[in-house]
Image (cartoon, rainbow, N blue to C red; front, side, top):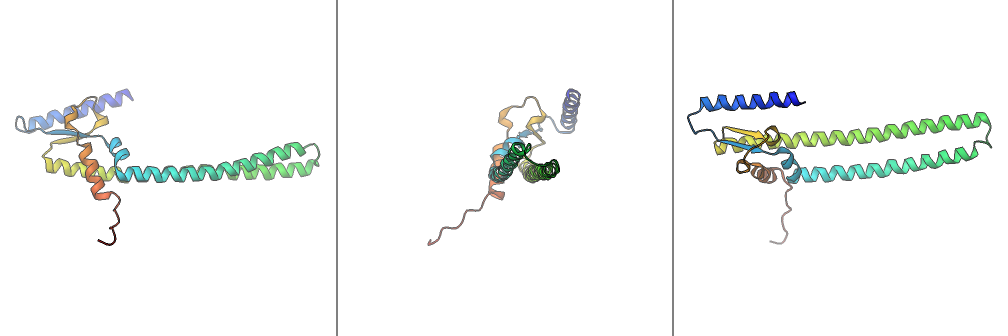
Length: 182
């Protein structure tokens, strides 16, 4: 991991030096964007997080309730173990194990579905933010806009994150319903 970061920093430094030599003296204009902050702060990111959290909570309630039912069934079976015929107990255990496997599969599938939705939403919003950063770069005459996590230090006055959030909210934020009667 440390080697990858070192190689990445060396690559970025080399890229910046190449750009610096290609541009007239003093013409380099740099900025950075904090994509993670933008994802967590923009309206679409907040809405996606809230929606996924709600889905996760609903799913957890559902599979926790099913888990409690299975737990009660297991306790009942354990209490009756000495009273039941060996074949009947074995059939009930097999039935219980099948239900438990189904419950585990349901839980894992639900969590995987939510995780996949999360990844898709993050990828979409990230793509939109990168496009907006490109527009900010073009309009602002920037030579380079880098992702904040890629550099160990950069002057905070070069941050275009808030501008990207503002533009993303304007372009992709929730549309407010028109007020009636006006």
